[in-house]
Image (tube, rainbow, N blue to C red; front, side):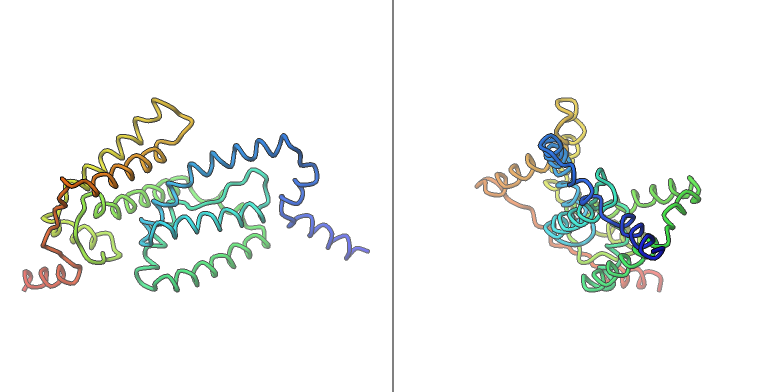
Length: 253
C-alpha cells in the first residue's frame, strides 16, 4: 500500500503539466494560447536565425532547433507558462564545440547535457542556483555578450576570411589583418538593421523590431542583388588563421 502511494505521488510529480491542463481545457484558453504562441513565435523567429548563424551553422538549423526544442519543452514541461527556446548564453559553447568536434560532437554533447538535466531534476538540485553569487551571474552574462559581439564582426563588416579560430584574441587578430577586405554594402545593411530594431518600437511595440528588420532588409538585399546597377565589390585579399599565425611567426623571428 505504501509502495503504491509513493509510486502515485512520484507519477503526479513528474507528469507533464500539459496532461493536467487538458483536463479543464476550453475555447477561451485555446484563444489565449494561440495569441501567446503567435507572440512568442514572432519573437523567437529572428532570435533562432541569429543564434544559428552566430553558432557557426546555417540559419535553418537554428529554426529547426528552436521548433523541436520548443515543442519538447512545451510537451514535457512542468509549467503551463514555461517558454522554451534558444538562448544567447549557449552560442559560445555551441560555436566552440562545432569548431572543434563538428555537428556530430554537438549532438553527443547535447545528449550528455540532457542526461545531466534529468539527473539534476530527479535529485531536486535546481534550487542550487540560488547560491550562485549575483556578481558571477552578471560577469558571466557580460562575458557572453562580448563574445557574441565578437562573433558578428566578420559578417557586420563583410570581411573575407576563412574559418575563424575559436579563441577570443585569435578572432580579433584575424579581423585586424582582414579589414582591407571590408565591404561597405554589408556594413550599411548592418547599420540599417540596427536602426530598424531600435527605432521601430517607437512606431509599434506589439511587433518586435527584429522581425521587421529581417523582413525589410531581406527584401532590400534581394532587390539590390537583382538590380542591374548593382556591382558587388569582391575583395581579393583573404587572411586565414593559419596565414595570420605564419605572418606573426615571421615577424617575431
